[in-house]
Length: 441
Image (cartoon, rainbow, N blue to C red):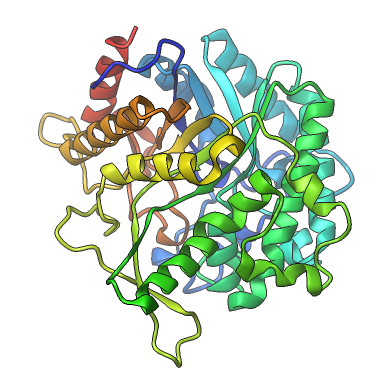
């Protein structure tokens, strides 16, 4: 692995519903993922996050693993229903106590806590009142951010407001493949504005409570037209607007891309909203997994683009194309597109699912994951050499976990979790990364 800048931040990432379990303990409320995963036919084999990795009870072992790995930061998410069971009003102190203990344990080991306030587990009570289609949810999120910062802000300096709002919008509200399972297609666009408004309110609440660094994290992808025809080029531009620019343009330039400009005409955007959304951030989180190849859709299709396969490249167990250079392409492209408006970047997720299980020697020989990480880190280094201001990199994920609608069928972890016994087994990729990071010092 090439040498990165001396103060480069190395970390691992997880998310609350994917690892915590303990969904009925210590006053936690119901989330949309509790409801969705318990609805027949919604997840692989009917899997739920009821127990997941039992991190709620085994967090000390997991913190020890992070320390053993040798990274300097841990990105985790805070479960809104654990803090405010109905998403508003009364605060559940036992829920905040859990994150208190986690933050203290990380700091004791010299690991910087990097909490994400929302990683898709909306309190069900808020969804029942309209979810992210309702402006009120954004207002409640601002209150929630203040509650969390009041408790943890004396020890936490770096915050992420929302994780991958484009995925939550698309999969949860447009196509219905994730919680809450709505299939609104382009009628889901108000969800984008209300998530962005929530981000702006959270930035303000966090700053008022002394936060040193605040960012939003989005999943971004280089968009490749399938051909040279004008129709394919237009389709790629439209998809880029939807996947990348819908959540980047407003926070970086204060404007929506052209296809979403109708939000103002529809009365969704209120006076002052765009200024709040564009409150300057200290950094930008980017999650990268693969490029997207797009062609024009047939005239009768509900959307003007179709995603097509990228041929001639390896694939993860999830079927995602492995294109390490796409990370360099993405980061350089963002630098060029947003020029002076782009803050420093953290790659807050990058990783892959592989088919891995313990061999006769008891070890997990996940060579594909090692190759994946090595290739992407080399690509990231090329982006830095090209002048992109990247401050850190977080592997997805520390642990095998509940992979949303795919349940437990996809394993992304540096550490294997036996879901029957909850035994943790560091994989070969864990040892590889630990050794590679030791050489960086």
